[in-house]
Image (cartoon, rainbow, N blue to C red; front, side, top):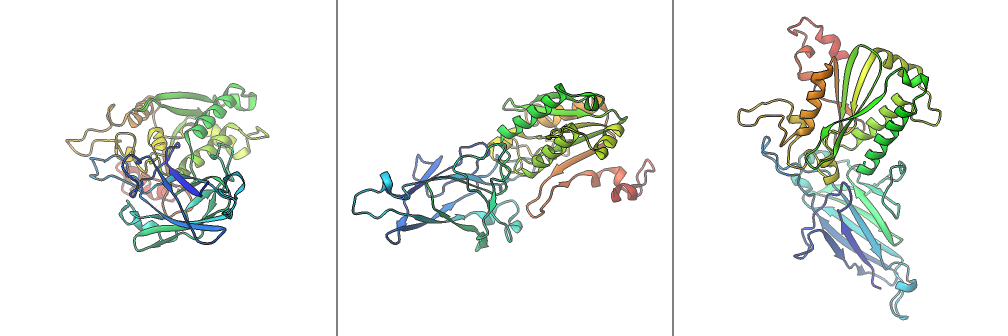
Length: 366
């Protein structure tokens, strides 16, 4: 069998397009590399980031996040060696290029970027925290993002802008939190852990919320309004594991106890599960950038709405029922090596001259 590579983005969170694919092959691409010597082969693969659904409020189709799977076959000879006169191919060197990298939402982020890849031969599972590596050959040159990978075994390699946080892992996180709440011993039960669905997305996925704490200050923490910012849900996982004692010891540490004594926390680990599954950068399944859906900012665009942004509508309704003293919106960024909290600096209480007399300078330092 000749060496070939097959490229798809049909997995959970996949995003890639094939500009050179033949008609009818829009969902995948097969490449037959050129043999450069008896035992090596090489090729260049040109790909495009697939845009999100068009966002009418911002008049743009966002794009930057990508994730795709490469399946290599025909290496090493053996039963795939072909005729007896053919030498088995041992190494396949592929240069991958994102040809429309210059046209993404934030091309300034590409210099210094390193594409992530999974060297496993199967899809990363929820337990595969160590599955991802950085490809240090990544370069942004002449408007294209390129990197080279040497395939030495048959099977799959995943390439992604950020490590994937798939829906399977999301469901496992929710299940782990539910199990911890059900099995809560006295040390956790006093903080009244609860898990609820606040509503459903346009595609019918649940919008889960984990609540815990016995304090009188009500805090809401939401994550991953922009689905391509997978690091935000990694942050949510760590936060929830710590608050619920999901660890081998199942013990709450003293700083966590102090927080649970002072606050009633409501935590949404993923605000945009539809966009996450679809491999979008910033929007849900119908093109709503949820970060812009919390209030009406234009007369002809009422937000939030049950037909366009039920995720935000569901969370806002829950906030109205509980009240909100403290709010965090957890995001990731193309250039920062950590998550950040967005949005509070635009609220009146942030200002030094807040109308209620609150010391905005103090809040800004917090």
